[in-house]
Length: 418
Image (cartoon, rainbow, N blue to C red; front, side):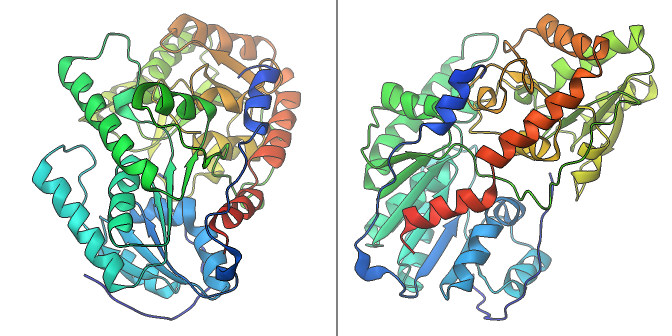
């Protein structure tokens, strides 16, 4: 289903849902950026397809780039699988063209996957797409294959973390998860070599795609992060009273929300004046349910405003941002936002997460699943609150140097050669 409108607006829309020097070197040492096509395409209007999943994620994380390309005269098609009448209207008001397609992020049903592939192929042909920008694992797989079959000249695949199938839990993956990982590796091997450029956010993902999936492409770029708007997420002083530890994100087990809650309960028993804030929607199927959260709220352990449209005020009132994730992250957007606002960070020494902390400079890294280390890191900050001021300044400096969305978009436009 497609609705075309060329109305343009400047409306800005956003819906919020390691370690040492080596970490900085990892982020800074980028792979050479390929030129996807020859210079004859420069300055010519393109039909550009952004292929993802949720509309809110597309606008929140890709909106700046889409607006920039539209301002250059390119026609932008926004492919998503969760359009409503209101979100479709918002896309049209921004001057983009909404395109619906079906995609089940967790299913491996072959008929469903073929349906997705066929829908994308037909849409690319119908709208004469000349550049395809696919992000996340499944859209990158099926979008790239469909674009290759439809002879789209430029096919960009962007892997923003390897996701649940590559997540290292406390226990060995079960038979089903091992099968799903093998299937995903097979699909990566089939699709990614058909891209004209592959973008990953961290070096760990590049290495694991090569090691586990045998995907070793010369046209791979390590981007380092999708970036944040430093004006929207502006720097503010670290508030020390009350000392507040904040978790922002999807309340999934893999994001470490249960570890955060357990440590909050331990510390609250010793330091009742310390505040713990949980921002995000409950997840009964893969994380913490609303019933569980309510128990922590009633006991006075946490405050839970739920999912919010604007996360900025909640980070601004925080002293420390905490993400004890063991999910296979790309490079967490929520942490980049906290860095930009100037908050010390506690996170895990794991792929993606480790690239947001210079140990003891702007925060602390802890081993994944190590709840005692997480508690010790929080306690250290409680014992030395004045150290958070310098850590906050170091976080803002890191955001300015590594995660400025305008710098990131300049690199992406160069890769797209538009």
